[in-house]
Length: 225
Image (tube, rainbow, N blue to C red):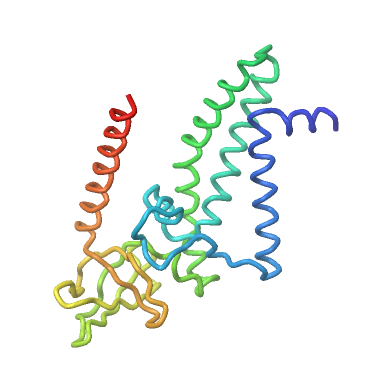
């Protein structure tokens, strides 16, 4: 027991000990219906918030809270494995801090694609068993199945789950067309419908935003130097 306590409180494992304890408390509150599952979701992907960041990393289709939990579990397992196999046997001293920071970065880098793949495989489960979770569908690709009517309403199905249908509400000049693939970018609760953009435009916008952020970071680094 003492060995378990020492490992759990050693850096960097202690980071996951704390975060996973918070995650367990959160899911307990969800089970008691004292906290929402869609805790971090917004009505739109516009802006820099946690849910939009996770969508950009490939976690579309599941609640951000679930994606974070999976990511923490996998990254924590990787960190614990390295700790048990390597770090605890080395006399690192103060070097444990920089080594631990590097391990944290590496664990999240390795766990991210694994967690995204796992969440992608589970998103159909959320469609079936948690249909009230609407905002976590933002970032999903859909295929338009019917022409938009005079008011801009159209039916579409998820590309990765054709059995699941959603309602789109387009604006003049951006109306869905039959057979077109689009990305859900905004949920309108009052209409129980989604705003969407063509998949090509969504990719171009994300690429432009990434370049803009990179330019801003370089500008900030040059200014500080």
